[in-house]
Image (tube, rainbow, N blue to C red):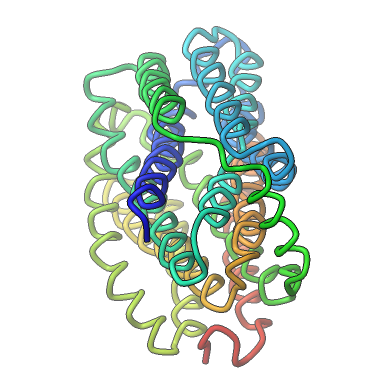
Length: 384
């Protein structure tokens, strides 16, 4: 592995990780914030929370295909600029529709697949798997950090100020990418694209089923983040939500290593079923209301959702062809973000009818996740 390739992997990994960090630190507080905007209703708040997932889902694969033709750096830079514009628009939004537009713009810079393709094209066959695994690990770490650090940042900054703070972070990443990376030689990029076309398709039942597991998982996670500020209203101010989120996330991170080892030992099927079951129990405890129920329910939901979002991609990448890993992860990411949209939008719709309807919806989602695991090919990915 050359120093140049290793450095490129570091730049792309940190940039994509910071991109997710900048959007995710705001998610736990967005429902309460949007409720105070002009026109803010539960249904529209759900769209504001989840619309970035819809644009992410729809544009991941097209952006990846575009980068194959015009260059990875150009598309990555364009995606970062769109994110900066979306964050700044959100910071000064006074109406719920402006916030919805801003969140859609944030998600439209769908460049995760571009990062995977860029690294894949410059890595040798012996190094590609390790570098892509490292990219996924960095992105996952930044996502977890966002939910850990976000509540602490919110102690000092309002939500609109957090949007500006996030935009500044992405501007720094944009400058780093512009000054410290080079375009991939067009001949090398075309050769890599030609090699991808000769490999086995990634549109398999196994990959699609795992992608749908992530859809359901993100659906429940976004349903949780929609509900939490509303359930804590009158109990905790949003600036003190760290009291619930910090212990929940730290426990989830601690147990993630244990759950990952169990999955690697060939017990992934039983484990993921148990994790979906934890999510279902978590929503039941939230429904009971009260500080103790909300805290315990949040812990179970964070443990279940964080572990599923880490373990399922790990299993999916285990047997994925290196030259198709960018496209394969693009499918997983697209389905995952589509779940983010569905979770926020549908929870908001059901919440506008009644809170009970929203909780019934999350219960059905947990059962759907279990059903997907039971339908999974028996010997795939070490499942038992």
